[in-house]
Length: 632
Image (tube, rainbow, N blue to C red; front, side, top):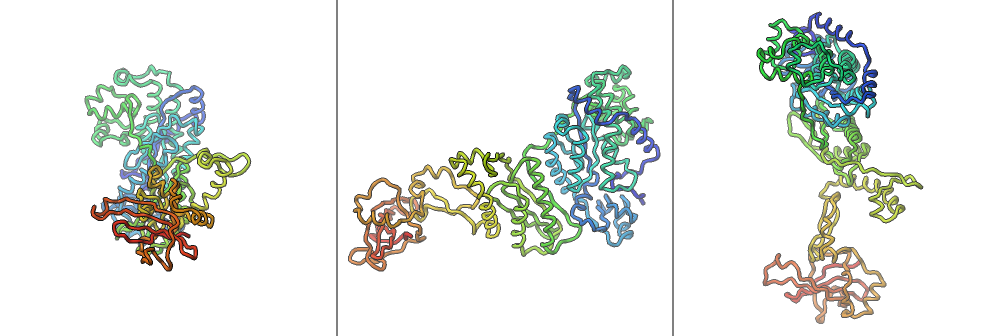
């Protein structure tokens, strides 16, 4: 049975006391603080590469612990192949250790929370964290299964030094519920090696809220600022290099190479990120640490080991370039919370929903983005995933509004009885539009608004009312659904019953329609006749009204025209109708009907003795009058 190991430890056996002595010697090797090194480096305008490595050794466990309440003290265990893979501090207190069988873990604790490891979820979480880290540097690389590499070469001045940058990264990750081990060095492989070594040196039970941070800064203080000092001493060549190294590694500056070696030379060879056979061969040769590896002639290394190992050593100390595959600059958000036990009351999702929305808002703020759509995913292991999207009138970043709309949608769900995970995603992301404030008021104002509305006062009046209008529209759309909340838009058809179409409330009508003849004819379908218009129509004969003016349309159009009866050869509704304007001929849509049934219509505006106005037409082919609209 394996001995008790901390959550941050690896699968290998605990280190002997010699490792502690190594760690102590590494700690004693540092004489200058990071701030002094960075300040000198900035003054000298050195542009040496600098990398941060973040190792999420407890990622599988932290994915689950994010969804647990602070007062939940149940032990949590992650298993892989029916063996303990990771365990929470509460599990370690009960004697559960990494490598134990599931039966042993159950025998040590009766109320244990047991979960199988989910590598796909770990990859998705690591991808999200890479997107989150993009706010610090655009050069972020993912090293599966649990590591991120950040090229911070050009970021130190922006964030005022490595201390401030490291603190911001760690504080942000802790707020998200993740506690990585951080290391800094001048090559990505050296930074990764230091982080892995620091992880393995955690030989006491950690407290996720404090010890991890301390380990991170110890790692930086111990060997990493030596690497930073290479930016200061890059021009100083070490004449003490062995001849084999001068032959094999002439491509790197001697000062930079020496500083990297100084920061990693005491690390045991078993921590090298290479094949196990290489580590075994080195140990059989009596080589215990990295310093002794580089004491060997390069030609001898190439003969004893394959090309891959020699290439790895060159990239480790910077003798050979090590290009990384950085994430795409296209932003996307996906984060989830997994619950330790099933949630059977959707009202209990309020707090995790609020947390995810705040994380989305922080993500958008850091990336200077806004969104007009986000999607919720409710998951359970025994049934399929249920997803629903929330659409917004305009792209924005308002977590309170997001929360109100999400609650409206959750209240409508009645077909899900239990949930064990909830996820939030958003791919419709847009750059934040910068706005300035009007000199004489507190209203936000933008150039686009001025161009659209013609004056600052009109634009400011519109922008002041816009948020309330958007909120109302967002709430109506969320509560009623897209099929019941829509706008009317023009259609490219002259026939009145087909000249309009329902359109999504958040979709703008096609701009090309405004250039079409049919669209211009029906630009104002709801225009109505007032008393003055009626008087002018009654005074003028129909033949005098044939000017090329915009056609008048009634406010109400029948979906299906109604046939009218004839009285003394005149159309009649309740009384005989008097034609006061027309005809307006519409001959359109012949492709929808057989050619032997022409669609020619002659439209008239007609009135009854009580003053009511109607829109009627005569079907030429059928010689029949129809009622098609009523004026208000």
